[in-house]
Amino acid sequence: MTFPVRGRVAKELDQQAASRMIWDEEGRLRGVRAIDDVSFSLRRGNRMAIIGENGSGKTTLLQVLAGIMAPETGRLAIRGRITNLININLGTQPEATGHQNITFRGLAAGYKHAEIEEKRQEIAEFSELGEFLDMPIETYSAGMRMRLVFSIATAFTPEILILDEWLSAGDLSFKEKATRRMNEFVEKAGILILASHSRKLILDNCETALWMEQGRVRAMGPVLEIVDAYEDAQKQKKSPPPPALRLAVSH
Amino acid sequence: MTEVQYISIGGRSDYLVGLKDLVRGLSKVNLWWAFAVDEVQQRYRRSKLGLAWIVVSYVIFVAAISIFFGGFSVKGVSDFTAHVAVNYAFFAFLIATVTDGCAVFRSNKTWVGSMPLPHSIYVLKSVARALFVLGINMAVGIFVLLATGHLRTSVSWLAVPAFFVVLFNSLLIQTYLGYLTARFRDVEHLMVSLTRVLFFMTPILWVRAEQPVGSLRRTLADLNPFTHAMEIFSAPMLGHMPDPSSWQVMGILTGVNILLMMGASYLAHRRLPYWL
Image (cartoon, rainbow over all chains, first blue to last red; front, side, top):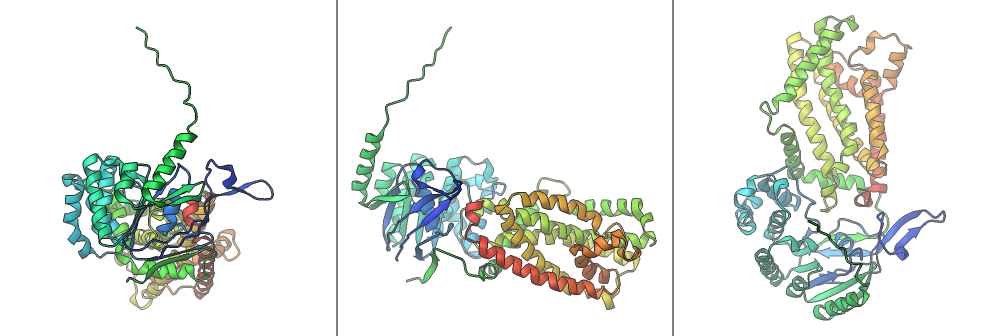
């Protein structure tokens, strides 16, 4: 499976780095270069982490990879069925029950009703949501919602799984369970792309890492090397701590 | 190895992107149908009468209009009731095309932003939902027609092709209004203001044929595309032959709508996720 991307995505949102703003001749802001000059390819069984500061283009890159946003220039080719879990709050009907959302997401991923019914039991068990599946998901906590969406996404055995930060919303036992499931999935020769700030999650799940900085690739390579380099850079950059806030309590 | 499922090349969309999207969306009938059913149920969930509210509210409306405005027309009250019962049900569908069309992508932004589904899924869902309400209201309308003896099978079947022409236009209009509103939010407010006026400009509470040619009302009605959509459908339902000029107008409008839909899709298809 090849995965070359050369994206140049202008996003009409403000982000910190002024060098990424695109202005027209009259001095009006026309866009923000969210990602620029990113190229890589992944094959079966590859597990890649994407790291970088907030606003460095991680999520936009994932959205391009998932086919949600089209790059303005460059080329993206994907072989295989993709499932993306980029934003936990997206792609659900909040007023519908957990069970109905299993149906919606299954249908949206292109499965037939019969195939969804086959997986329903497995999803219910893996998510450990039990009776809650009959309640509207707007009543769920972030962790519960994450369990449901993760369970659905992985039950339908995707070939390419794209995950963003929010996996950290789960509790410790679910995180371990999710890690086991992702490993199983990668052993079945899938591709995993995971954006995260959690060192443990990255080291447990990935073999390579892509470090994004200001929308460009800062470094790419073996996961431990890149994560260490990234964390060193973060420590050095740290500005002196802000003046301590004092909370005065008087009797 | 699986074949290439998804390729995206930077640059421009192709000119047929709107039609291709529509075809891909139509094939996912399971999905948009499930969405439409859920939305209709959602609106009436936890209410005792449930879907029967659509019938109740429509019967109340038709009865009230017939009593208050029956005197506006030289027709008898039974004729006027049939006229209102059919026309308003159909008008409500036309209005839904415009107002729902503006919201069609905006209200589904969480899905647009999370899955690479054909955009026509949302349009088909929206039209299916409006169709459901039309079906229920029109059942009331047909009941009134039967009770007042207006339905004449020799003419009334002409409403069927008219219905499909309007349905097809509804898909086209919702698509381009949806894109337009995603880019320019003012469109939605403009459309709300216009539809309010259209209620009076479209011959629902009054009968076009009763207005003298050249009068203000008649002229406005003739310029109003809703009048012609209604004429080709409602006239046969009420047992009259539709005005052939209305069919001509609808033919031209369909061509224009196809071009507008293709143009809007060409310009907006790849940008929609950024705009929402």
